[in-house]
Amino acid sequence: MRMFLISCFAALISVIGLMPMRVLGQVSNWPLQPIKIIVPSTPGGGLDIPARLIGTMVATELGTSLVVDNRAGANGIIGTQEAARATDGYTFLMTSPATMAINQHVYKNLPYDAVKDFVPVTQTTSIAFLLVVNANSPYKTLNDLIAAAKSKPGEIKFGSGGIGNMTHLAPELLAGATGTRMLHVPYKGEAPALVDLMGGQIDFVFATMPALLPHVKSGKLRGLAVAQQKRSEAAPDVPTTAEAGWPSVIVTGWTGIVSATSTSPIVVTKMQNAVAKVLMMTEVRQALIASGAEPVGSTSEQFGAFIKAEGVKMGAAVKRAGIASQ
Image (tube, rainbow, N blue to C red; front, top):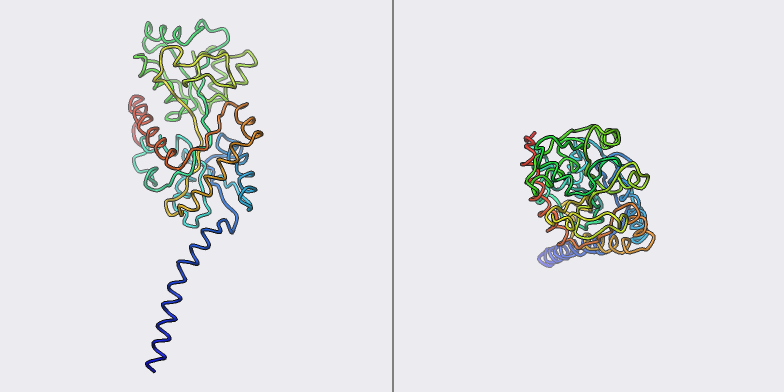
């Protein structure tokens, strides 16, 4: 009996000892099933396009398939909350400034913590913000517009795609840096704001280059400044905010991939490596740059530091805009 109990105990210890190795083996062999990227917006939107463009090639690189799951609603909160709760190690979130840097300052009872509930994987793109005016506008340069805003406090009107999003907060960052006060005119999306800009009802729009560049190229709008340190390859003739003398006015839309904190570091590293490799592919780079987005492919640590810095910057813009917590 004594030998039997010893044998049973030894077998039990052996099984317990093998369990971590089996789990480790599953992680090291990851992926063993399809990957899912949650996109907290509708199909065809700003996050959906890079998710599908990059996701298809990442799946090929990892030797698996990938599903893009659109979970729109509540300014990205619905899809982001679902991603935060995932524990399978195969669910990722294509994220943006709204979900990671802005919502935490706008919503009082946000059902996720952008820092504590997620592990950053990589920043996928940096999307230049472009300030545009009507093609017939009297403002030929950014400083023309700023001078007008200083001489007529509260009269220069800018349109946005809605209260609290980047097209609202980018002008607030500009106003804060230049010591001006401008009038916010919110719309239900960027499209109607652009219609009124072309019609002369508002003075400017400050939004992502992919949304505005086609109208600049068609001659309907005039680009005054790109909100970054160096000129954009997609619009090399448009000067930067830094060139105009406002180097602190750096505004970028961006996309990135995060996962729930329960995701193994091994999985995070594998996913980061695959995405970074895809972003270096010539066809992917050309497609992104042509649209006004620059590929990034940062490390998890770099992306984490970037998210924290963006949270601080956007918090200041939200406060300046006087957006009450909801």
